[in-house]
Image 1 (cartoon, helix red, strand yellow):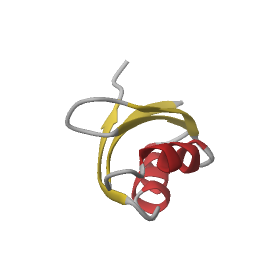
Image 2 (cartoon, one colour):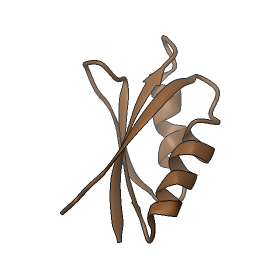
Image 3 (spheres, rainbow, N blue to C red):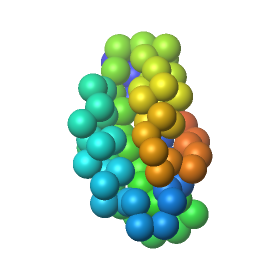
Image 4 (cartoon, rainbow, N blue to C red):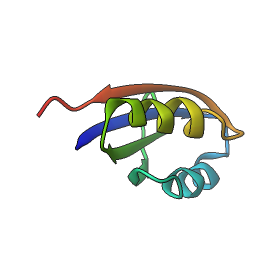
Length: 76
């Protein structure tokens, strides 16, 4: 299994809606609205690094209101 964390910057006022939409994506285990440089952090658990890319680059980035993402793959 591969675990990754996707940091999401959102348009102002969209965080609550985005949290629900992100959590509905296959492979996303949980999402949290956070304070700081990003607006949400999503935990992704999938079988391969390619699936991480699919979740982050295809599904999360395609949601209206997502400005940008950064993905970090856990090494342990």
